[in-house]
Length: 210
Image 1 (cartoon, rainbow, N blue to C red):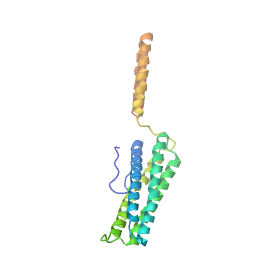
Image 2 (image 1 turned 30 degrees about the horizontal axis):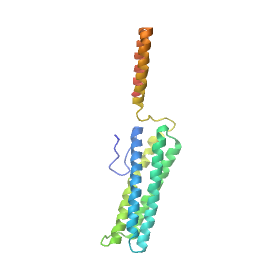
Image 3 (image 1 turned 45 degrees about the vertical axis):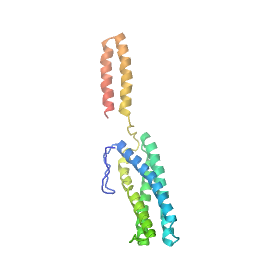
Image 4 (image 1 turned 135 degrees about the vertical axis):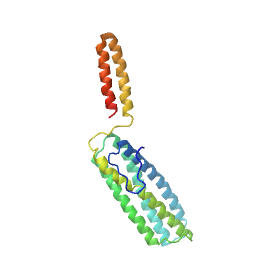
C-alpha cells in the first residue's frame, strides 16, 4: 500500500488516491475488525469474572454493542473487498455511509460509557478492567473514522470498472501470445506483418500504462 493514512484521526485525504490503495485500506480495516472481535471477547471474559455490580453489567452491555459493531465492520469490509474490484456501485457507498454512522454513534457511546462510570482511578480490579474496556473499544472505534473519507473518491468511480490488480501483467501476457503469432505469420506473409506487430505492440504498451 503506497498511500499512508494520516497520523491525525479522520484527516486522511483520498482525493486522487489510486483505487488499489483504497482497496488495501479496506482490507486493513477488515483485518483490524476481525482482531477487535477477539479483543472484545477476551475483555468480556475478564469483566464477567468481576463481582456482580451495576458497573460490571454496564461493561458487559458496552462490550456486547462493540462486538456487534466490529462483526458488522468485518463482514461489510470483506464484502467491499470482494465486490469493489468488479465495479463501484451506489450501494457500496451506502454500505460505507452506514458503517460511518455506526462508527460515529459508537464513539459517542464510548465517551458516555467513560462518563457514566467515572473511570478516574485504577486502584481496584473492577476499575482497571472497565478502564481497559473503555480504552480498547474507543481506540478500536477511532481506527475506522477515516473510512468515511473514502466516499468522495469512490463516488467518482461509480459506473466505471476500476483497474484490477495485475492488469498490466495480463496485458503483457496477451501481447506475448499475439507477438508470437505475428512472428509466425510474418514468416509466411512478409514484412508487413512485422510492421503491424510493432504497431499493435505500441498500442498494447500504452494501454498497460493507463
